Length: 388
Ligand SMILES: [Zn+2]
Image 1 (cartoon, helix red, strand yellow):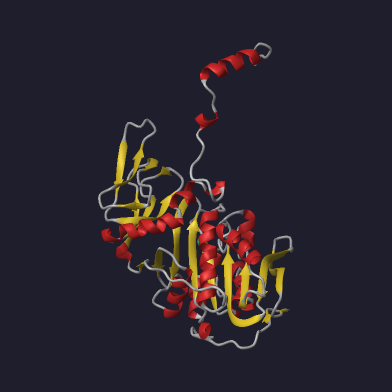
Image 2 (image 1 turned 60 degrees about the horizontal axis):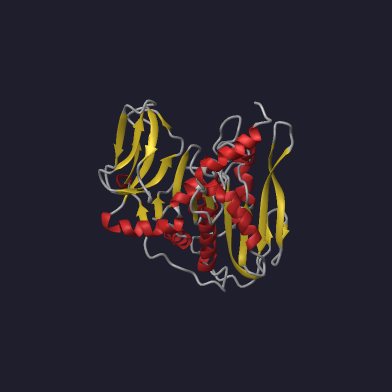
């Protein structure tokens, strides 16, 4: 397969073959065995293949390569409800959970030997546990696609601003990443064994989407991801009735001089000082690290103007621990970044993710209190017959 295959004119609808066939016009949900547990029970991955009535390219979407990164699981659950074979020109191949053992244990790596599925691709039929599972998935499903989107989140106790990681030096990958859309693209070829790198080098342009926190469903981020998938499908002719859109501004980070992890020099409790947007000017206070008495406070400032691509979610910090990932932005572009964050909703993703889509603030405890006079009257009447 070459990287120009996404432009290939498919004229005849094709069955999707793994070791069975999903015919054009068919949507199939199934569990697929990729390995075995200690008890010898099958380890099965949930898969959905939506094979369109009409000919077109094949797109894979994958989630939970790291077992505790759940936002993508929610995105794929919605994708498979959203599209029917009658809508699609081509095929959607959805691997709902890649790392099932990690998912069941609610941890990043495969339990036991802490193997990282995202260093195990394309896998080996006679390799370790991770490589064998990767091999089955890659061989049967992923390698048969023309392009792919792999959903991740930050690791536990951190929070990642919505962004795309991709090798933007590869024109086919760059095209896919821009079709998906993001304020920020972090460009690198990726580590050896990483799904996006292996697939892209194999002629299947693939990007990683980083969104929010581990262990969460964050619906506002999910809506962005669904819009991104839809625009990818529109851009590659998979949804002829949808007009593809293009971004007017984005930031591509390709050199390490444009980003830095800022580390705490003191142990203590972190209090964020930035906001409402995750953008800071050079010299501005990002956070303070204080002791428990509040008598000592160390200030962490921004070495350059930039936006916070990732921050600590757990407020406890040790000297040397990273508190945030700062990405350089031209001060003149600040308003463009702010406009994008109005859409992406940085505040929602950190605080309001469990409240759904419409709430903009949390109710205060005082909202459900009544005036003191009424409360006293009510409690003295009630308390006359009760004892603690
Ligand atoms: Zn991940």
